[in-house]
Length: 186
Image 1: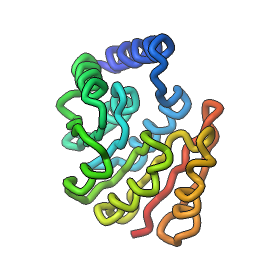
Image 2 (image 1 turned 180 degrees about the vertical axis):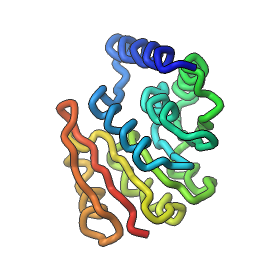
Image 3 (image 1 turned 60 degrees about the vertical axis):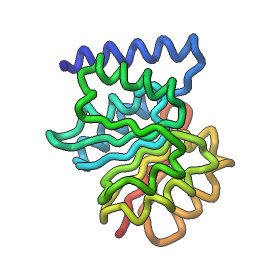
């Protein structure tokens, strides 16, 4: 599909999010996520917390041929809506959405994982990261959304990625919120 089709689906999700109170990353965070995907050129991306597929579309449309997104979504209804949005955007062939609790699903994923996008229960970010860490390839990128508004719930996560010696990490303030971008040292 064309980028204009992708953009139309994203605009529709943004409009519905306002009336349905569905949180999603803002445009600045989305643009930064897309920039990171283009720059890092991941082969395997894992997205924890797909919702209706907004970030998934932004990731998938920037992947190189043969690369894939494995999304994990606990809500069957949201996963169905994400599948429909991905089909409308013409990106369904690049994405596999797994249904279930990420704390359980992560164990079934194959590595190496090149990029992880965390946008689920903020208080679980560190648990998600620790479960997926053995599957990370050297230089893997971890992007944690909601790192501004929920920073109190993310303090243990921040301490880990900033102080463990396993990551090079930086915080970006975008859309009146923030993301934490960490690179795994391997």
